Image (cartoon, rainbow, N blue to C red; front, side, top):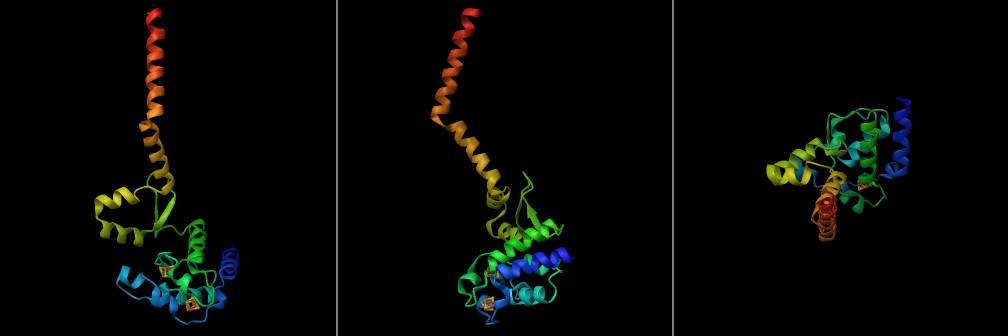
Length: 176
Ligand code: SF4
Ligand code: SF4
C-alpha cells in the first residue's frame, strides 16, 4: 500500500496535480459527458485529483477508467496540470498492480490498448466491421502486419523471389 501511495504521489507531483485551482475549465471542455451520456464528478479531473490527494493508495476505482486521455483539459488548464499524461501513467501503475478488469488488451499480443468502456463506445459508433479493422490489434501488431504485407507486395522482393525461383530451377535441371 505504501508502495502505491509513493508512486501515486510521485505522479501527482510530476503532473502538477496539487496546483489545481478547481476552476472547472477541464470539465467544460471534456468530451466524456458526450461520449458516455452522463456527468460523474468522480470521473473528471477535479474528482480524481481530490480522491487521490486524500487517498493516494486507493487506485481501484472504476471511475479512473472513464477518462479518454484526449489532452483537451491539459491544453486549457491554467495551472499546468498535465492530466492526460497523469491518467496514462496512473493506468500503467494500475495494470502493474493487477487492476485489469476495466482494461482492453490486444487480442494478438496482449498489450494494453484502452479502457473497455472506451472500446465499447468506439465499437458501437463505428460498427462491428470497422471496429474490428481498427481496434482488434495494437499499433505494434498492426505495423507488423503491414510490414509483412508490404514485404509480400514489394516488387523488388517479388523480383528477387522470382529470380531465386529461376535460379533454383536452373540448378535443379542439370542435377535432375
Ligand atoms: S482546468 Fe486545471 S486548474 Fe482548473 S479544475 Fe481542471 S485541473 Fe484544476
Ligand atoms: S484527458 Fe480525460 S479528463 Fe481531460 S478532457 Fe480528455 S477525457 Fe476529459
